[in-house]
Image (cartoon, rainbow over all chains, first blue to last red):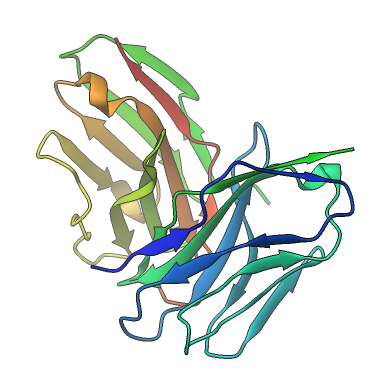
Length: 110
Length: 115
């Protein structure tokens, strides 16, 4: 079945460091791809999305590019802040619902 | 406007009891989804409703789980004869319509603990 694999955490970075969280998906069909973020004590919220190959989603300094050839949707940010500490979930659309990765916890230290 | 709301926020129950979890989607959203978030398991799809169509129940883990959506709005997820492995955070989401591009808006979840 459809699945999403993302790098396991936790990831600990210093402020202003470069962030990459890897995500790959099963190549069934042409899914939309998403990154959701869950800040401490809050609900899941959409961070960015891309709906077709080579699309780049971006928001709050985060970016991810839909790579069909490598079935990847890696999340990147050039300079993380303490406020970016959260759990990040990669997801793909599947038959109308979302298939999520297991989440990557990011901690950013000042 | 108001987001997705869920109640209760926390529920502690004894093994073998039934529980009902409620979700109020965003007004006007026709699609409603239930997910389960367990430690080490990530987010797991349970069921979704789209308008008046028959729900997709393919993610329900056992026949102890059921859900209904009354009047195309509020939804209730029922777990019968709860087991300890049912302990998790149950998340509800809604979207304007069901579709590959449509953003799902999530509620804060109900944390269920089965003793």
